[in-house]
Image (cartoon, rainbow, N blue to C red; front, top):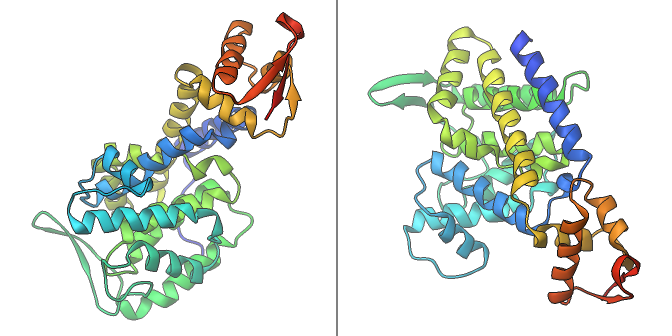
Length: 317
């Protein structure tokens, strides 16, 4: 059975806005971000998703763990980050329609934090906020059937991927299939679903905006519970995705470094090129900026040059 939700004017407006921004991202190199930008965004994703669950590690500590350096901190927090690093490194290996992959991801994400991992809960649970019982999850006996229905819904080719990702996130949180790790799994699997159509979501840290608007996140879940449909949560999550794409585009226009552009350009398959070739890849930079970038590339010994002024050719080592 298709999970209930409404297509509201706000949903339509957000889908249109997101589609425009994704088009702009795809029209530039941002759909394949530079290694530096990818690393920064991956760190933001991991920190933000775990921070929602109470993890205390800083950006610097998470960066150190990614670089296999020793970090002093709570053992549980370090384990959570190490697990998340592994899972997000393998993001493209997870198939969104596969329940087996979903359980495998939970096992990796919760390894050393929960027993058993990668298995649905075998007891009833309720979600408490403060002193108030916020949500009573469906009986544990129903969880396997509810999750199978949810994965069947993901295979509906008539549904928009943007909508499906939000609906799955909400419905999974409602079912609460695991004893722990439901929140981080909901956010992870929404990314996995989006990735099937939009490569940019591999490194788009929309979890950062969720972390910054946690009250709205939980409020939209609560409103959807009361309404009996996921519409409020869809509106909230589409708004988060829209803002995250806007931040990415804004970053590219204002803060992208010469080394980011050079790192991306080197991955485009050129063996030799000139300044015009460089500017065809980066359409929004000036001739002066392109010249400074290429000078920086020579200083970094990324390529060699031959000729002078506008007749200079560059040869990648």
